[in-house]
Length: 329
Image 1: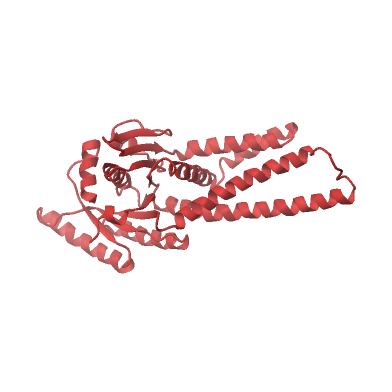
Image 2: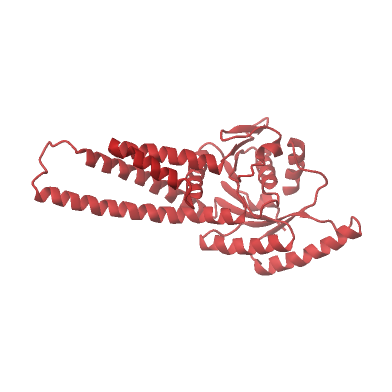
């Protein structure tokens, strides 16, 4: 049986996803520390609104990069938390400023009203988080050897990973419509004899050019993220669960959703596996867990499975994270 570190060898981006409360933040942090001990520079990014990263490392972590561990050599763990509400607010504010810069001043109040409504619209938060996450991953990949993402619970994660394809297609459609509009406008101006050599660009043409540049930047960003997610040689998705009925069923469902996005999970990590030689109660629990895991293995026979033991006490602080990291090797 391969260890988790052997499975993740050579990966540049690692997602940890699964049902809430199964230990994704612990696994993300311990993996980051294990990689950093081997001399790699690692960034841990939390997209889970619960944000346990700071609690786990026993130090404040916010939207800036914070150094969590530094070795004697090149090894480093940095951490950052992406708060979905704050990301959505900042995203809408930035887009609003761009739109108002392209619109006549008398329409600015209408723009403000539109974005206030958009703030409450379904999908706005996820789309904003995707853009921020994509930017963070792509920029961090230039400065870090590995980016580890501690994602939100199962359903949110699956939708988030579908968005690069959906948003890229949406942006492609907008660009296609812009091209048709611009060709029609050019033809109309030509018929009216308004295209003259040396004529300055109209305010509308300036706005059209800026809109096109914004759309092309988004198209490139989502395209890059989509290609990064689809590259199994550099990107891994690890499904974390406990050996119980509901986490097993959610994991099987998540696997199906991931496959539709073209992403094949790299590993299953069963966390907090009960020992079979520590008393009658835990022995019976171990046997019951085995039944759930047989269902999991029957449903996903091709995905490597890693079991991690139930530990005494809460995993908080560098020393505890270090002990957990030892288990991964």
